[in-house]
Length: 364
Image (cartoon, rainbow, N blue to C red; front, side):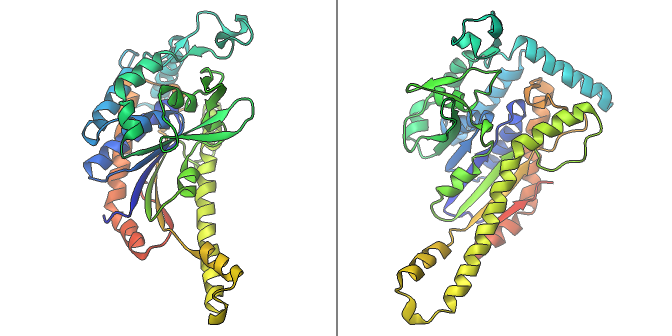
């Protein structure tokens, strides 16, 4: 596949589902597709930081180490062909995590937040995310992350103002706090303090950093948008499916909104160019014509969607079910999605050669 000026990896939030993104990253590396910008929200920010904070030859190894740490000490059951049994075990595993936490990630607070001193960290969340600091520091070379060739952007929300912003290694030096702020989903995880402000999970405002990447695009770009929640699905039939579907809609809607806007903007630019072509040549210097000409200029982008499709047994607890077998299934699913996409890569290649903007979902 011919590659444009820049290749970006855009990683949605989704907790335990994030191992799907690791499978995508592994297969892209095996396909010799270099990435020069990674942007993430929540668990996507963690995966993105591991990519940006390691040399290419160590990224998959470090991702594997992270996900093995998350799942290695938790109960894991054999795979059952019966979806009802699998659903029960899936929910049981998630319940176990809710009671005991995830090693290297978060642990339950000794004092329940309802009994803690108001205003203290203990009063603001059910879990303590301090273990994640050591995990991130052990897996990420922060000097490489901040001074290396890969751009990193992670989103978070200011608790007091409600404003959403991206921490970007092109504008400031990042450390574990910025990654943890992007994944501080309340009321489970505590807010993170950075320079006197307190931050929560960016997914509260937007669970995809695609808009940020497109707003700061420089030159032709290929974007791999890796979503952990599917915007479309069948109508729920049970209360468990209702919980799962509600979460999918809540955390996936912005992705479709951004790509729809991208295609509308492409149509607007086409219309402006058609109007400009009808104007007499002596109007070329008119300030309004100059402004319209600049608006009509197109920096082509091909957005390739890789979307996690939930299994029949998956319920509303998929984002905190960290068992090793489920993690491995998500990882394989991500790799398989890249394989299916690459089998149709000529469609993306043809679009990039035309210099147009388009969005693709080839991983079904």
